[in-house]
Amino acid sequence: MTDARLLRDTFSAIGILIDEATFNLTPENINLRAMDPSRVAMVDFFWPKTVFDEAAEGTGFQYECDQPQKICVNLTELLKLLRRTSKEEAVEMSLNPETQRLQISITGKYNRVFNMPTLEPQEEEVPTPKITFKVQAKVTAYGLRQVIEDAQLVSDHVRIEADTEKLVLNATGDLMGATIELKKGSDALLELQTQEPSKATYSLSYLSEIIKAASATSEIATLEFANDMPIRIDFQQPKEGKLTYYLAPRIEVE
Amino acid sequence: MGVNLKPLVTKIEVDLPSLAGKSVAIDAYNSLYQFLSIIRQANGTPLKDKIGRVTSHLSGLLYRTSRLAEMSIRVAYVFDGKPPSLKNREIKRRVKTRKEATRKYEAALARGETGEAFIYAQATSRLRDYMDQDSKQLLTLMGIPWIQAPGEGEAQAAFMTKRGSTDFCGSQDYDSLLFGAPRLVRNLTISGRRKLPRKQIYVDVLPEIVMLNKTLNELHISHKQMVDVGILVGTDYNPEGVKGVGPKKALDLIREHGELTDSLLESLVGNSPKFDFAQIRTIFLHPKVTSSYNLKWSKPDIEASIDFLCKERDFTEERVRRALGKLEKGIEESRSKTTLDTFF
Image 1 (cartoon, rainbow over the protein chains, first blue to last red):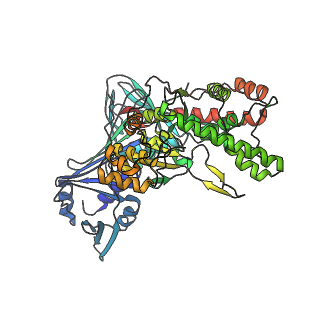
Image 2 (image 1 turned 90 degrees about the vertical axis):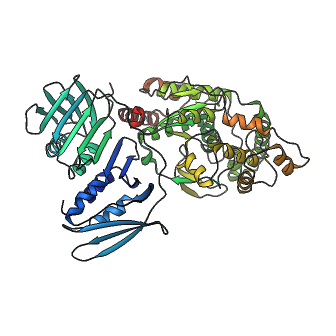
Image 3 (image 1 turned 60 degrees about the vertical axis):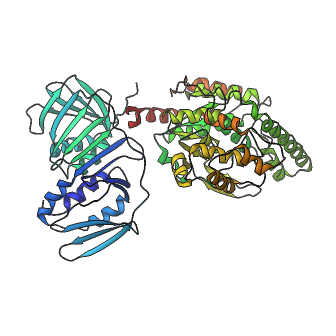
C-alpha cells in the first residue's frame, strides 16, 4: 500500500449503489451499511482502524476518532475529489465539528485542501438479510469479472447454478445465449462447497457494476447463494476489513 | 377533505421512473374521486356509456394503472369499508357541498358558460355504489389486487405499508401520516399535467414522497403528538378543528403542552362545542384494519377486460388493447424484480 488508491477504490465501490453515504465512525472502526434507492442491492462495509495503520506505512493516512458519530456525505462529490489523487499521494479527511464541513487534504506533488458540506445522516438501520446459503464459491475477482463480462454480451440477467462439481452461469438473451462453466480445479474457481444443488437469477447490470468496482479493491471474492435467494458477494479486504454486497434475485415468471 | 398538514411536512419531489420496482397501496376512493373530478369533457360532463352510466373512474383506473405498471410500479387499491361514525358530520357536509355545486353547475350550463360549468362539475363528483362495484370488477380483470378495508381505506393502506407489504401509501391526503404510514406518495395517480383551477393553464405535477420519520424528526415531535396537531387543525372526524388554529399554531401548542388535554382544548375553544379528541386519537392510533389480504399481481385477462370495457361500457377497443398490453408487459417485468426487503 503506497498511496490512497485503496480509499478511493473502496469508496467508489460503495458509490456504485448510493449517492449519499452515512458512515458510522467509532474510535475502533469505520463502517457503513446501505441499500441502493431501489432496495435491490446492499453494501456492507467495515474497516478497522488497523487498515489505516497499514496504509500509514506508505505515505500516511491515519484514522482518528474520539467519539462515535455518524457522518453523511455526498459520495459522488467526494469521489470527484478523491479521484484527483495520484500515485503515492496521501489523503487526510477531517470533520470540522463547528461548521460540520469535511476537509479533504491531498498532499504529494503539491498540496491542496478541499472542503465540502456534510449532510443530515440517515437514521435507518439496514438489517442483515436472513438467508441460509447452500452454495459457497471462492473465485478470483479477475475471473469473476471476466465471467460476468462474457454473460453481459448476450443478456441483461444471468442464472447461476451450482452442484458439487461445478459452477455454471447461463445467460439467455433475445437472440443469443451463453453458458459459462467453472469446474472445480479451474484457475478462476478456488473453492466450491455445495450443500444442495442450487440456482438463482440475478440482474447483470447490478452484478457487473458491483464486481467491476469492487474487484479494484480485492483479488478474491466469495459468492454465496441458494435457490431464488439473494446472492452475497464478499470481497476479501486487507486486515479485518470487509466489503460485502447482497443482491436480490430476479424471480423468473412462468 | 383530509387534514391540512401541508406546511409541516417535508416532501421530496421525485419522477416516476425513480419509483420503478416499488409497490404502492393506493387509497382507492381518494383516486376514484380524482378520476371522477378530472376526467370530464370541456363542459364538465363526465365520460358516459350509451345508457348514461359514468365511466370516468374506469378510464382513470385503466390508463393510470397501466401507465404505472409500464414504469414497473405495482399498485394495489384499498377500498373504504364502514367509516367511523364520527365521520358522519363530514360526510353530511360533503353531500351539502355537492348539492350546491350541482345547482351552480346546472345554472352555468343553462347559461352556456362551459368554463364555469367545468369548475362546478368537478365538485359534483359522487361515488355511487355501481362505481365501487365496477371498479373492483375491472381491477380483478386487470389482475390488479384490491383490498376491502374494514374501516378507512387510508388506515388499511398505512397498516400494509407499516408491515412492509407495500413500499408506499398512495393518497393525496396527509391523513395517511396520522394513520402511521411510514412513506406516503402523493400525486401518483394524477401526475403528468394538471390544470390550474379557474385557468386554462396546465402545470407539471411530479409525485411527492413524504417520509413520516423524517418529518417527525424535523418537527421534533412524536407520532402521537402529530396526531394531536392534526386534531387541532381539523380532521375528517372534527372538520372544523379549533377556530383560529392552523398547522403552525397547532404545532407550537403541542410542542409547548406536550399533548392535547381537556384543559388545553377548553382554553382554546371556550364555550363553543367541543369534540371528543381522545376518540379521534384512537381512530388514528388504533384504526380498524385487517391482516388478511392478498397482494398478488397476475396476468390481466385481456379479452374479458375488453368485453367489459368495450362491449358494456363503450370504450374504444384499440386504445384499451394498447393500455392492457402495457399493463401486461409491466406486471411481468416488475414481478421478476424483487427487493432485499423480502429477505429481512
